[in-house]
Amino acid sequence: MTKCFLTASVLLAAGCQMTPIPSSAAKWNEQAKKDVPLLEPVLKEGDIIFRLSSTPLAGGLVDFSKVVADATESDLSHAALVYRVAPDGIILVDVSPVGISRRYLVDWYQDGTWNTVVRRLRPEYQHLIPVVLAEVDKLIAEDVLYDEKFIPDDERFYCTELIDHCFRVAGRPLARRIRIKDFPKNGVVMYIGCAIGRIDMNNEVVVAGNDRIGLFSSSMLETVVDLRTSQPVPTARPDPVLTSYRPVPWP
Image (cartoon, rainbow, N blue to C red; front, side):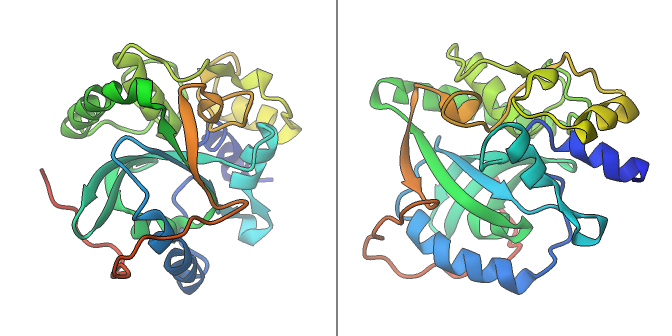
């Protein structure tokens, strides 16, 4: 194993995937064509969209997004926030090793996307959305960087940490953080990777999680779309134009 190979396991440990070169753009575009028309009529600003990313390493021998999911007893590894419901598509706010970014939903699929689940604040918590999105605007303006050390502070962020931070600012944390060393099914690669990357396994991190841990477990949220098990019936609406990497309008 090389140093890069091991460190990659830790870069994924808290729920964020690295941004890979897609092994098959056509494959993910087909997945987007299938999923996006089902998702776009349903999504609302403030929704949290979870997925299992595809992050092949070592020539495709290992998918480290799956490693993350397995370590946290989940079939999810990543999360983003629905930022705008725009006339030309859904815009997400996401964090990857390149920092904070705004991406159209269809473009988000190009990284590799499986097991998409959308969770929404229950009605009694909907009043938090303007505060959460205002904090997102602030972090976009600051152009915050990626947190490669997974340090629990408010200086740099990874994907799930950004969402967690915004809700904490709003005064209602979604879920407890968990120490890296306490992941339910840690493996030797995670331990070695932390040692090589000089990452403290006592760091409390935010994972996508499952029904018991992580953002997904929050009692403040309810599932509105779960493409792991079923698909919603789309409303009458023209199919979206699937054009990758369009510039996102701002503001």
